[in-house]
Image (tube, rainbow, N blue to C red; front, top):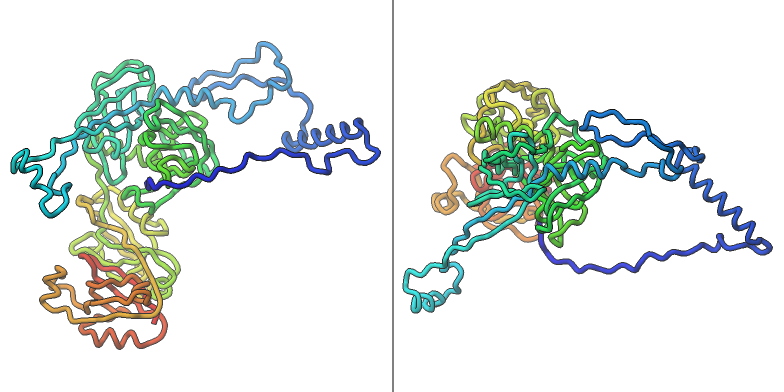
Length: 518
């Protein structure tokens, strides 16, 4: 997250005042004002208790749900005020239980420097070469980092974030009672930012948080974040579920985050997010911040996704994901109008010999449903495909030139980064392009394969429709309104009309659609 400094404006302390209407009216004495205060208090009681303002007998004591014990009757009557349970009375028990499952993680990494990149040009290396020799190198440095984790099995499995332990030379975990334990890495998955470790000498008194099938937390539900912020030690913070299903944030390749306003700070990564029944609902992962500290926007990976990744890492050492083999982009207003659809995602390109190609998917198709589930955006489709087993059959419902089609195929295995990547969509209005031939020199310079045919974009006028649409120098415009282009003259003729112009653009090894307003 951004660590930009931001000036902290000090707010004046809130003022406490009595409105003029609370002062005694002319002729109204102390008794009259007291009576009005009693009536106000009674009204508040009615609002807060739903009309029940008489003292209530004390209820049974709160018993943590994980103990399996039944509440016992109260031994003695408590004063009436003591019988009211503020939210939530079970909070201390939940927090204490969650902390016992938490671990602090300490890692050490080796950083190596290239002194040629650190010195200024123009003889900057000569000083070091003169005193230390021509082959002088900066000595490697050790970097220590802190994070959090959660014990999820009595056998000693610890779940944390990939970015907490990635590239670490050594890892140690410390339990709540101060014991330092050695661990080994079972597996780490950068795409989901999750990692699993195994405690080597497993104590017999671990208290894990279960990864049982917990329903997704509801909007507004209270949760506790557990972690080691700034290395100060185990800390619990209380908040609510601000949102669920957060995607497209750029934190990980596969995202389905729970958003919470429970304070999450550096050092909390990998810690537990727990509901009021003491159940693990997420793994704290990231924050949005301008200061580097919490600003009430934190994100946690839901338990359902964490459970799937843990199972894959423990059984296979890596995460197997389904692969479709398409480059897709979200619909904006311009693309929706151009393709005559309201929902779905656009296929910008199909990889050769991919499962999608074998099933008959073509560039320009609009994918509407995958395995019967409506396709809402690119992130949702990528999550659905990745969650499917490699080799599993799939059914795609799509729109092609306004005609509904259903295609069937078999998913492949996602192996290398870059497959099924989301394509950013931009749009604009008016044009301002300088075009040229895609000759042999341009192909060599831009590394454009012979299979790509089209018109080369030489320059883009700043502020023009082409610029706002996202066109850049070096782009190759392959199609205009679904028709192949072979010369700059063809594209110029297409630009002379009115309305929107749908362009297929090749850039950096992949194609995507843009809409240009003429």
